[in-house]
Amino acid sequence: MFTYVVNAIKIVVTLQNVEVTMGKLNMGILGGFTGTVGTVIGFCNKNGDDVIRVKSKKKRSSNTEGQVNQQTKFGMVLEFMKPLNPLLQIGFCDASGNGMSSFNYACKNALKVAINGEAPDFEFDFSKVVLSKGMVAQPTGTTAELTNSAVNFNWEDNSSTSTGGKLLNAVMVVYNVMNYQLSYSIGMATKADKTGSLPIPNSEVGDKLLFYIFFQSAIDPLQVSTSQFLGSAVVTV
Image (tube, rainbow, N blue to C red; front, side):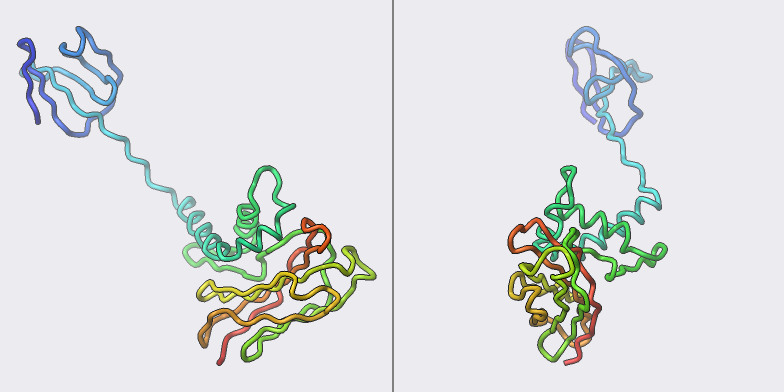
């Protein structure tokens, strides 16, 4: 507490929390006042002293259970999607719209469809994650197989009976969901090649790998196929 005497008026300043009310200052800064002015409040105590106290800051109310659950789910999505951001810029470059970034659009979609279960036991369904969205036709017969040091991708070339043609680059993805490491390729293989391979990302025995693929037009980069989840495998060596 600090006490000042100005022109025979004693002003006591105490630093403590009080209820906030509205007020106005009379007789200038040297006069007593009641109510709230700026960041302080004033009143006259039982001894006749003009007292000024610092206005307390309102504390935010605690988050509701629903808000906490939503924050938890969003945190799960954000952690998973961050390493994939370079691919999302390609896969959703023409799908987000309405001023929403490709990354935010992808996260919004994953939050909506890929989180299952009830609090606090939420589960992430990796098969529901979409890395791209577009009108180019998906290939048929797509597979991914883990070998000792690589993941082999295979697909059928259905260019003659689908949209997009043969000038399509494969975007292959291997994602270690245990440490958020990934390997991917853009343009190393085309749809006409019908096969491609990726080294596995930094991994240890027991780590879980996820496999995704989509195709991008070599002529118009905005044209992509909707991504496909090709399954998962556990590192054994």
